[in-house]
Image (cartoon, helix red, strand yellow):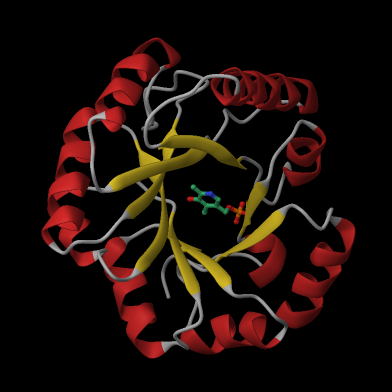
Length: 220
Ligand SMILES: *Cc1c(COP(=O)(O)O)cnc(C)c1O
């Protein structure tokens, strides 16, 4: 199937209130435009530089999401370009986001990324450190937390379901509390291989790359 057909096919299968984010890392401007022409307006990139270049080349009504690990020295390039940062995972990064966005009088919309499987190879805050990060977010003037994001360990359907369910519980618990600068509006869980399970467990935003664009080729 074409990119356009894939996009429309997935859109048909998911509930209307779930956002389908097209993960366009490594994809060309032409490939992205195919998804755009099918109606996609939200795209996710892993790297600041790639996001920035594509921002310049593609239509301005696209909402760009940064879904990969964010280095502090790259934050300044995101102001005015990023719609939502999915990867807030430390107080130090938060301080840099606050600094760069407030300097330009802009608001940064972010998700807190949680390392739900405590994988050493992955970024994201551990649950036991979440409160400290939340407290720091409450002190900000230019950062709004819109929800949570996670990538889960590779495993069986059952283990995926378990991790997604844990994320949903954290999300719901935080929803019942009142914090300054923090609202639970987005639960970003689910990728090509597991998005159906993620939606069943409460995802509000799924991040799909290969399911829309086909197999990724990192050597291109
Ligand atoms: C690449 C990537 C995705 C998309 O993965 P697919 O398996 O291609 O759907 C989703 N989330 C993050 C954080 C990614 O890096």
